[in-house]
Amino acid sequence: MTQTALVTGANRGIGYEITRQLANHGWQVIIAARTLNKATEATNQLVASGLDTAHFDQVALDLNDADSIAQAGDDVAQHHPDLTLLVNNAGIAGDMEKRALATTPADLEATLKVNLLGTMAVIQAMAPTLRTNHGRIANLTGPGSTTVWYHPLAYSVSKYALNGLIQNMAADFIQHQETLSIFGLFPGGVSTDINHHQQGRFMKSVEEAGQQIVDILLDGQDHNGQIIGPDGKVLSQVPE
Image (cartoon, rainbow, N blue to C red; front, side, top):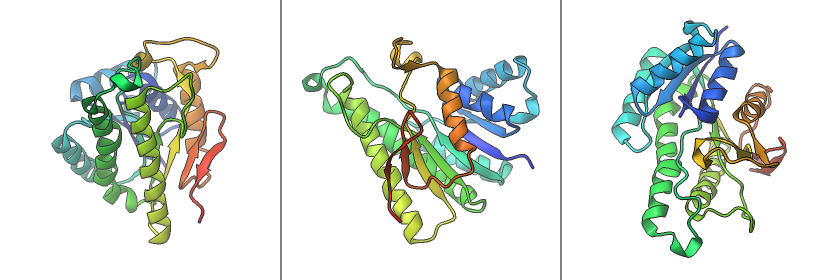
């Protein structure tokens, strides 16, 4: 039986690669991008690479636009009531070169609005459909701590907050016996547009990151409340 996933920010980078690999495993994937044109372009590229067009559908979903998110939730409920997996990949980096004291409240507000509040709105929009299918919510996130080598303040704070959202929501799901699970995936450094395709021995290609993420998505295990790191180890866990 074909299973259905929705991937946000699926038109490029890691989101595109997750979409490609899920389709290779026989999943139907709803490609969510800020505009329907971007989602359609990504679909055309995937089909041109040899994948069957039947594996894909498209939806416009802009994390900065509450109406767009609500409409996407309605569209999915109507056309894809079998949705079992939501992959929250979309997000923004902000200025990753800006020093901490130069970071403004507006910088923090921008990353939090998309990476935290936008992601939460997507979860809430898709939850009614996911709930009927014992659905899973996977969120691409960041490390839970900082280092002197990597500390982009606005981006990191938004991901710390996202990790808190994931684990508090997981705890709520456990307490209230929800038919949902939620977890975070931190793939480590990945060379993408978001970091100007940075290279180095700690950087993965999108193909490597996509493989790591999809392996976890398809491993059949219950990851509710976990934040999983770049080596596949659990960085933190909500105790049941």
